[in-house]
Image (cartoon, rainbow, N blue to C red; front, side, top):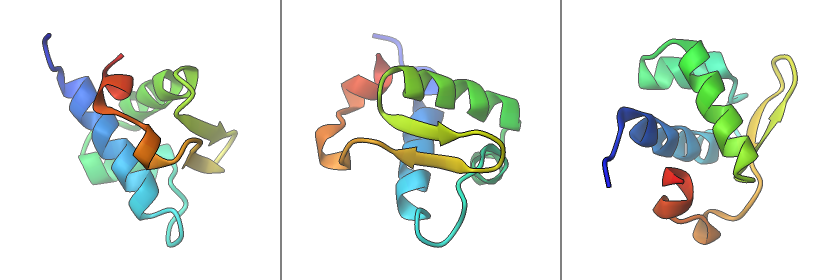
Length: 80
């Protein structure tokens, strides 16, 4: 199994969404600044996480939120 930078960014994104859920709007720009990548990279990862049923993304600058409790999300879920 090859771990890619996309996987590590996805884990970072999930943790950032959880950590900053009450204090910041977790937009792709905010998350990109946290990871120091282009917001387009974050948007693509968010689309994958959304397709996996892990996050919900609101249109515009609504931000992202985690759909399932973190305790139920495994690293393998993120990897797939």
